[in-house]
Length: 320
Ligand code: NCD
Image (cartoon, rainbow, N blue to C red; front, side):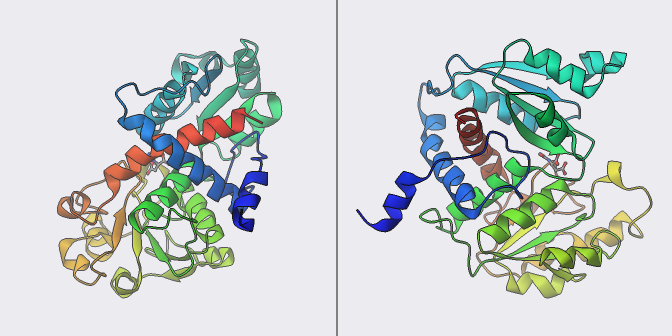
């Protein structure tokens, strides 16, 4: 047996929680993505279930609106045969004044194995993890982190660029475009891509791409036209109107002209550029429909891949 395989055999996933990408070593990320590969086939079987988490209970605890991430975690847990409790924050005691810690401890007292949480406050997932004994998976906390989105994005890039053998992204250059300042997706993606060896360039208007992001080792550009010819992947972020405190650009029209991915701009890009968007999309603003639905787009693959990546995540953290 060669030494690479031996190393793989000796590897043990060490993390009880997935709170962010920063706590993961490159080999952890690669192991999780390889585990996702092995779960991917489950979704195409006629019986879409494996017994990996039979007898375990996973709670979805969403304090912030979400459609796709919530549904994705729900389905991922069901496909692993876990019992799933979908806990809606609006219908919960938190609206009656119960603290976050009381809420999660009460839920944990029902005997659960993992909490998947989304909250509008940065740091909420860490606080929950400190308060309970079960595993905690961060499904997005404020502007801080959205680790499973970054992992599914990396997985999607690897599949489209034929890098699933070793998930080594050296030589790849990825542009993340848009509202970087308010984006947990951007923060988690930057870390994940860099750990896998990719170069990251952040693109957007100065108000949304502050120069402090250079400290994370990224290039910064305020010109999508200049960046497009040199990147292999472009990840278009949603303009997060709900998080903008003041006007960050002159008008939606101007934003679309300079930073929207249009058919015109695609002429500047490499033929095989991979176009991504975490959703939900503002069609006509950050991305034009023909591009979102076109051959370079991986938007729906991202959704499909999210399932396998979240199955791998739940499987690994609950095994620790
Ligand atoms: C992202 C999120 O909620 O952070 N969406 C998602 O997880 N599907 C990105 C966004 O809201 O723009």
